[in-house]
Length: 114
Length: 111
Image (cartoon, rainbow over the protein chains, first blue to last red):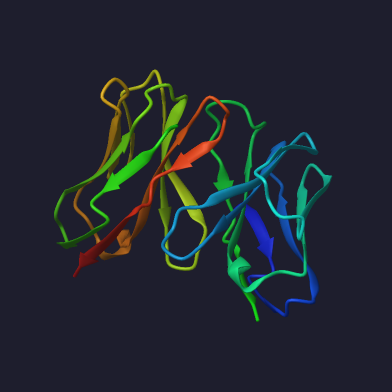
């Protein structure tokens, strides 16, 4: 069983909807990550939070809005998405985001935009 | 700019065989290299992490090696089983603490 829990597992939404993806870890990790993965491609980094502060934003469109309410939770708020945003969204965590720390991944949320 | 390449893109072998997956990177200035496994529609499972100062890591039937100077890593799987079928990805951690990913090798173990 994965130690990083993502909900929901699947999400279908229209382009005008607002929804949120949630990620939770209880390993005491202080760095959390959002990745986007298209079919048969490697993950693409979207955001990194370190000690609850946004440290990296990889030029992600504003229709994706991350939030880190506390050290265990990471949300990704979605609004006015486009069909090309359909993908697997992966959350990961690591001890502190420093060098040499393995990232632990959740099983992802499969997002489909109609 | 760091680039990571995995060859082959796909591999199919009979059960019981030993096999090697390859990963190469263009910039030797890495902090570490990780091998991950991904089952269809699932997240990634970290298999092995090799620090830049290390030459290899072992976990069960898996052995990963790292040659920083030549920009290469291999993942050796001994006595392959059908349950090993998955996509295997390697990623290097660069000087910005970010993972740079290869495109993966899709492995099929035939019973």
